[in-house]
Image (cartoon, rainbow, N blue to C red; front, side, top):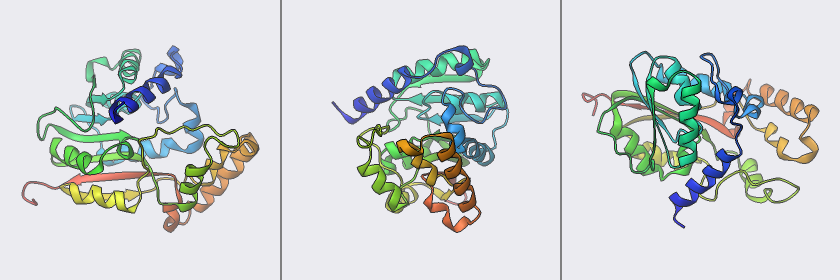
Length: 271
């Protein structure tokens, strides 16, 4: 089985387990957390979504690509703000789920979803005002991804991605050794690699513009919620509070398991 086939199969199975009732499918205009993934809320993913929106600044009529759109949350959120959104994903079930969400949320007229391998984007050059994604870059060949994003972005266009980061050695050790032990399930696919310094450098080297990393919130100690003895209200509350305390020191941002990668394509006059 090829890597694309493995990824499609893995995410098809993830979506099969997703809630499909109207309450989970419907995304409201002000939603910053996916109602189909309620546990994202305690990881402060709303802060990261807000940062994506702030960076690409969606406006009515903007054409935006949602790269690796998954369940379609970002696509629908952008469409609620007037953007015309193209969502692509390698998983057919993810695309089907996204179409249902757009219909349920009342934005099907501003969204199009297509099964597509993100490494082989078929869009014309300079066809999007912005590109976004949630947890997609670390599944891709980063040099190819950076070139692809740079190619489809218009000059001066912006991109923003919520990503799994590999800058904290302790979290990377836990990721490599704990899944499958201590009743901890493996939640990641076999073909993903968190973004460390070397991989971020590949992004910058292949993208025709500026690449930056930031941390809208620190998600570090609360990853301990995967441990059975911390998977309770008290444990999660304590770890969340400590993470918020750490977040007061911006220099400690790289401790976070999640980060924001922003990309700004230069104008033609700058190239």
